[in-house]
Image (cartoon, rainbow, N blue to C red):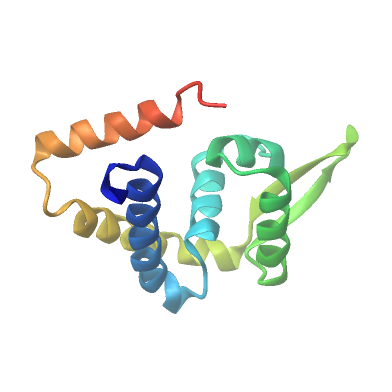
Length: 141
């Protein structure tokens, strides 16, 4: 049965959450992936962050990160600066336009989390998050 397939269960669940989150972010003209990148940059505001570091934190491949950052730069949400000490290193930072969206994005994320987890008990939320994090950190090839 398809309901016994982990790929099916995770894919359909992820798609449902992604679609809902996308609707919440739509008025800001950003995608869930872009919101994830902005959130990562904001959380690392005490240091400069590279596209490679963003990819590792978000578990995204380099071409995927690069494409998202290209679009975000065109939207004036991020800027890229070459490290003056090493021209091969590029740092990514948010723009004023993105920073004005920070509270709204945080509110949308909080609302999405609340709505997605609404039917779970507090204990189930803890177990679900722990199980998903264990799966993310697993040694699957």
